[in-house]
Image 1: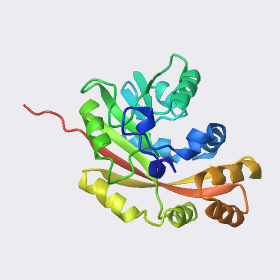
Image 2 (image 1 turned 120 degrees about the horizontal axis):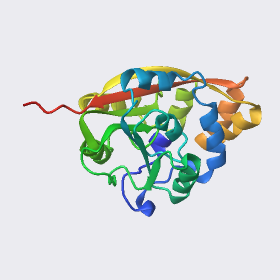
Image 3 (image 1 turned 135 degrees about the vertical axis):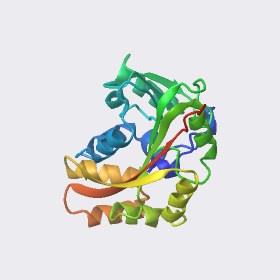
Length: 243
């Protein structure tokens, strides 16, 4: 649940609120990434809504760069921004020369004004009220006509959403949705399937995503190797200048 547990918004790394799952267990999180959205529903929605072929793409809170190669296969350029030094190094090793990875936070992006066409963030930083500095920075680096695309978890969709709300009782999905609506974003709900290769992987992933009591509940309630997980895609385009 990086979208709820991290604030990547201040430039110095030690000022960022840690994202315990990927920061502390990057190898388990890699296995989680491979299990997520096995049918590609999120990528399909992104391609339909904010196609990036030939575009300059910025991935905010890119972690260890898992999504960067997908963008790099079609984009003109790809930059990942991540506050955690260890993840920056992992991301650089992953992408080689196919993308640039910079250590920075969402509220102090090390890019010039109007330099990218798409700002993408997936379960990172942009969680609703409080992320206004990051939104302002995203708007600054966007070219007119460009888009911000934020993918976050939909806590209204069971069973994963039930476990999220049990672990974070103060989190209000409706308020997050209202926040993005007030900020001028459209919203699209996306249903996905997570599929794990074995029970060990499934249980390890649930244990880094939830507190111990909720993780044990989630493990007990999951009898197979798949989970239904909901996401929301929030999109806002930067207005094109008019003569």
